[in-house]
Length: 483
Image (cartoon, rainbow, N blue to C red; front, top):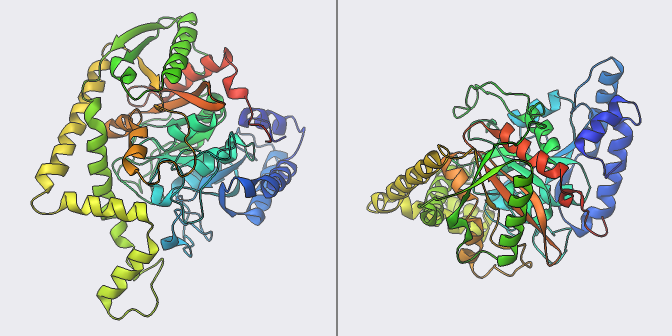
């Protein structure tokens, strides 16, 4: 059962081939057996999972149907879950049990999903390797000596290792798409505002977006259907009708205009990945797509702009963690200043502290105009580039990452080298566009992803292209040895 996709599970449950309770027991046993070598979970919720599975079986027995009814998933550990630890991968929130469910958690629970646990992540979603977690690094199931990508590396590793069929994740600068590429999964970052951020602990509020991680585009469509929608509790949520994402999966790609930016193929891209991207382009051409070279001239400025804007927002968002109201508090503080200093110094890890300091500096008097304001102007130029490109093409295609997954610890002494791995993904967050990564081959036995970008609210188009590609290739069906 652990090799079944979400779509196959839905059909199996509908045909009464097995129950949600049987499936849940199987997957919980598999997690207990295999996760110690991956470290993909922070918390397991066995009692909740079994009660939800029994409830889902009862709902089906009463005639209820639904693709997610009885489907086992896990949540990245920054989605608040009532009465369950929500740590954000940080010592700061190690003892925090959320008093409410995030909107995404509540919507998926209402749809009948079964929550197996909370997955490991880079601390406060800051990282590209899942090595900054207070609970230790997550290992890539394709090679345990390599990173799974971050910050949603726990969700990615768990799905890739067939511990469960799908999981929620979040993407601030590529944290769904990059782990998807590194672990041979399909990962979708929706349009900003498409999925509610209420109850999702913030890193950078204007960039963060929740989305699905699964093995296929079809599964991502199913999970996104349960996650998307307007939420009055979230002021950044957009009141836009949610289409049936599964309905357009089989649309023809005949005449689809695909733009390939020339800037994607410069120095820094592994030539073997470039070859795999070209192979993907040829596959899509066979399906009727039309390829056109385009330009995104301001892409070169995206990384410096992102690493001003995101830390600036983080310094503001994380100011609430001060040792006073909730979360970690230092022992025996001498006074209020000592309480703040030591609680934050002891509660936050090195990468989080680094980004808070960068962000605070960028927002400080005398530097705001020079750094933050200029970065926001570049952000607008990046968005304008995309708007101009989408006047000529329907989607944009390129590599998800410049390199395959690196070895654990390889970039720890050089944060900039790790930041540069986000070069192809962060532009979608700066512009608020939807983006998807899909499996496209292997380099040295490690998975490689191809990224698709589309205009606002065109997630269905991305899923359609990825699904048609997956009907004609088998990269997404490969399983890591030992899992």
